Length: 192
Image (tube, rainbow, N blue to C red; front, side, top):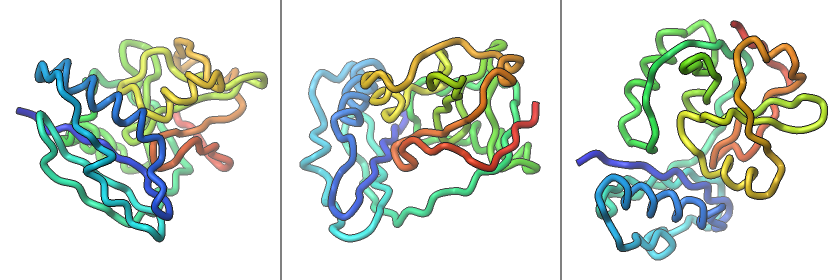
């Protein structure tokens, strides 16, 4: 039975966006294991009161472990569009295929995965592009992240299918995940 992962930001004792993590946990357990109960993440988390932590929960039908890791954001300046047929519909703890894809392209900080001709995500985050009026996120992400779900629900993000050739129509790029929030990359280069 595969292990799944939830990565939750804890900042000075505040657990960020827990309802989105709980919803994904419940949905994943139901779809993969037929579980009808809920793992109460709030009761399981013992939030550190000072500092920024990555709360890493490993689970399947039950919680296997919870770790609290001090967080430092990865610096990203160079991205490269890479075609791949990788499948990562659920947030599996086994990220070997994603890690290998990034290692194969060590000339850049992060890769943008192109699947079936459309841009999806990077190996660590969902992605969005600014067209001068609004932020657009790929309609077909590799993984439906919690921050992406929140920003779509709030109307800040809009979904659209994006091809590599469309990149020239966008002026900015942002990465988003539970830890980064919504981070606009100010100094970046995308190799295609």
